[in-house]
Amino acid sequence: MLAGPPRLVSLLTLCLLFTVGWWYFRVTITSGHDGLSIPGSSASRSKQSRVDPLDFSIPLRFEEGQEKAVGENYTYTIVIGKLKKDDLGWMQRELGGQTWSQVKVYEVEDAGKKGEIPRNKGREAMVYLTYLIDHYEELPEVVIFLHAHKYAWHNNQLSSLSAVHMLKRLNHGRIARLGYMNLRCHHKPGCPDWIHLDRPGADFDFINKPEEIYWRRSVWEELHPGAPLPASLSGVCCAQFAVSRDRLRQIAKERLLHYRKWLLETNIPDQFSGRVFEYLWHYIFTGKEVLCPAENTCYCDGYGYCFGNKQKFEAFFALQDERNKFNEELAPFTRKEDRARKEGQKIDWDEESRKRIKELRDKISSMDTELDALRRRAEERGRDEGSRREEREMWDREDLWDYAPAGKKGPPVHGTEKEFE
Image 1: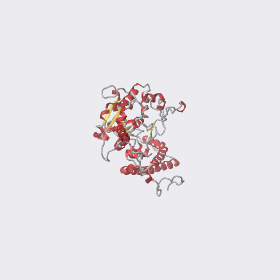
Image 2: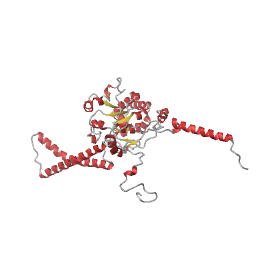
Image 3: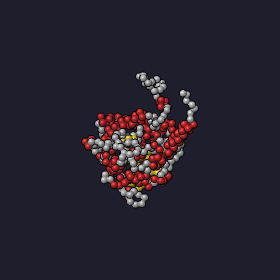
Image 4: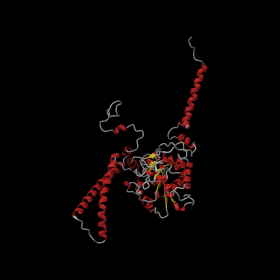
């Protein structure tokens, strides 16, 4: 028997089901229900805000921000904790009044007073968390967290270990785009593999990594109840970094209060409770347990020192290391000459020593000339926005094969042993 024309009720039912399905899909996308949300949208952030802020079993999903056009400025604040004996005159003199007006200074010895930290505990961590909590609703576009000293071993080598040079060259656009940036580019200490919560006692490095002694499972669970234990916590040291307002606003204020409460109540000694956070900041602001950006990328996109690629960057520092070894060998001779000069005497070196001193000084002078030329060339490349993009992180670049060696046209052909085709 042949079927007749479709019944009207069936067509209406199908139309109704289709309409309801389409409506549900649209609502889900725009409201962020069931995990469907547009990356970077306000819907994505609103969904995140609806989650219990202290439920650490649900990882926060951060999206990259948007940077302004080249040449446009960002509002910013530099947050510093200091002792009364620390002199910040270097910042006023060398960065100028406009920058100084953007600095928020906490006198840690004034803890408990209005506008200061509640307690002098946890080193800079208490300062940083207090600023974020107290200014959560009125944050500038970029917040830079910095120590009070101008020079430090953990500042960048190409900036002559100077905080002034780092601040002057810092690319706020990178911070806006990534959300978080450690101000130090060099991996060690902290990367690529640092804190292990399950490290056996016999394997502890009590000299170079004392903070790991306190990084036990109980500490992680106090700070992040419900969150899975990380295989490793690894990030560049040394608690100097910058975060965008967009990223900070994606973290509930309740979490910041939770972290500070832990810091106030923990029995871990002051020095090490602060160092617990030193290897936690990158996790708080990125959700990544391991964050070790390429050093050449950090220098190029972050500060405008662009060597061209990782190999050329590493070659520069290999040359610098070789130069420093020669300088270490020369140092004892130089110290003896300096002491003799102060005493009004002159050292009569033997022939072999005279020959070696001259060789070392000639090598060092030649290497210094070469290093200066390479550094100037890197600075010149860094002034070109295209060159900075070349060394920037590549998440979704369709032109990757443009970087292949000359004559190579594309990816390997499936099922062949040819490298390119």
